[in-house]
Amino acid sequence: MILTGAWWVGSGHWDIFVAIYLFLGGIAGGAFLVASITEWLGDCNPNSEGYGVVTRWGWTLSFTTIVAGSWTLLAHLSGPFLRAFMFPVRFTNWSSWMAIGTWVVVAFSVVVMARMIWATFGTEAVDDASGLPRHIVDRVGFGLTDLVDRVADLTRPTGLARKVTSVVGVGLAILLVIYTALLLSAVGWNVPLWNEALLPPLFVASGFSAGIAMVIAVTYQMHDLDSRLVHRFAKLDDAVIVVEIGVLAALLYTLSSGGLTASETLTNLTSGVGLLLFVGVVAGGLLAPLAISAAQQLADEASMLATKRVTTMKFGLVIAGSFMLRVLLVFTAVQQPIVAV
Image 1 (cartoon, rainbow, N blue to C red):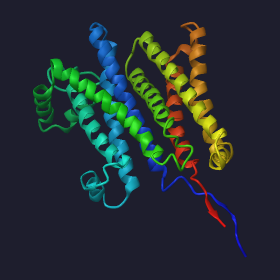
Image 2 (image 1 turned 135 degrees about the vertical axis):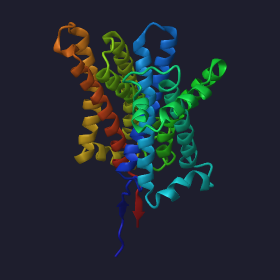
Image 3 (image 1 turned 135 degrees about the horizontal axis):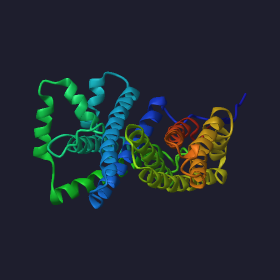
Image 4 (image 1 turned 90 degrees about the vertical axis):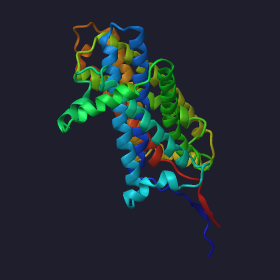
């Protein structure tokens, strides 16, 4: 007897740790971009304290998420952690985005750690709640704070070196977010959902949007930020969300006009868990935040819609949608089928 049929294969040996890593990498890059923007705005508006607070939280959250993301990647690799840590110096396939991306993560981590230290330690540090790393080091004791203060003052760049550091950091942040997309789209020829032309801009838009949401939400909860400053970043986030919707729509169009594998992917997206995730991404993470922003625009300042709680909820939806997008892309993708004849 001869058996014929198409045997569908999952997207690869991916697990939830990969989705978490892609999400945290996007947040780290997006938070770094937010911190860079607010640093520049603070230089242009030296009398505005709000920009400095957002900048310091941006560095801190970017560093925290890239560290957490690196640990989730190590958890995915499994095996002895010491062996996993040796991966960057033992690989030989320099054309692999896994290899290239590992060094991007290492370089970015060094830069963002330096930016965080320069912002919260040394003579230029501001002793407030946004200096969370400083407060943590203070609790450790043993004179460690004084040591880090001296290191920060000795290494803090000025003039042209400061500008070069900023530009390099922004470049690494963008490359970090793009790399998380290229990590998947490198096999896009075999997995239609991981389109190599559309996945990078989708991840950049999603990461930047989630980075804005994370930094502003945390800073807004920890400080009495000027509502006008929060409103400016909310509008920027809305603009990025619109771009993200456009790219996602283009990606779905490529599936609707693709072949058999693309059709099977659409089936995954519109049934079962895939449908729940898809609705969560589109309705919860994209359309709902835009609707809240529109309602806030029409409401007066005394309305409940203008409260800190509602604004924070809106940013929370953006962050949740960004995470669900990564889960959706990892777990609903399928490869070209194995045909048995």
